[in-house]
Length: 381
Image 1 (cartoon, rainbow, N blue to C red):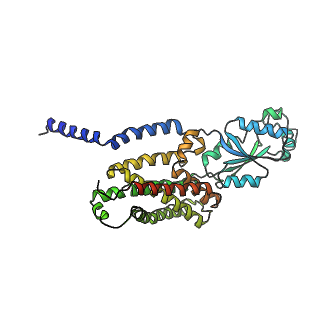
Image 2 (image 1 turned 180 degrees about the vertical axis):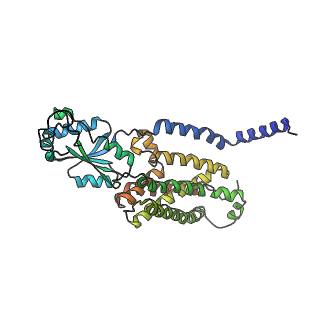
């Protein structure tokens, strides 16, 4: 027969254990709080102020006014200026900007020749002479960013035309680089590499030291001449090979099943992947030195994994997040790896083009291994 008294006794015991386990209690509070803040404040699908470059080949009062009108939409923000389209294309490859607005030298003639077809007014110009006023080149690897830029394609520009525009000829020509078909798989598959590596690498290593303690192997390690740094390095090496196998599976199947291109060098891809794996493993080792048991290690892994998925640019465009959130996201290894893996796989970016993210990843890996080594104590308890 069920006894209410025994149920209450077990309930009290669990409550006391939960009160003593401050890490678990903290996760119970922090995980929903972080999700609420991320989804309610940081995640924004309505893109604004996308960083773009300007190539003003006309260099006139009219072209400057045109650039101001485009920027006034608040969809884009001109952050850099270039003299040639080739310079702008390089900046897109290096992920410094997401698109480039190219104003041709004959922009004044193009505005004058813009006919008024489609508004019930007679067509006074030859349709063959009608051309878009300017040109956008866009990083199409992120479908949400490219869609935001394409929304500017039919801007009326009534302030400059002094008459209704031609609805049959777009105001701006838009060229999508790297993903002209705007297929979501092209953007998702490389990003999925970062998400899976973050989840598995941190989860595996976060339980490494804790597992040794729970299995009673710590006594054996104490009686050996092994140093802390040697233990840390020995712990992460097997997982490096596991991570590389996962990358090969994801990109290989993505290429075969979803026709995701691999435009970059395999050597460059190997370098950036190794850096991210080592950085993720070092973070997992730090968590392993903080957690008291494997449950706490898993909870702390989830605490890191959620922001890595939501704030790194995998699901939502990084440029759509508020600046304070972007600063927090820049601390996460996954944010830098998203830029690197998409840069190599889709844009054929070189190591030099990715130098900022690479230097940050190296620094993070070294710092993580150092902190984990200093926190590890070759003693019981």
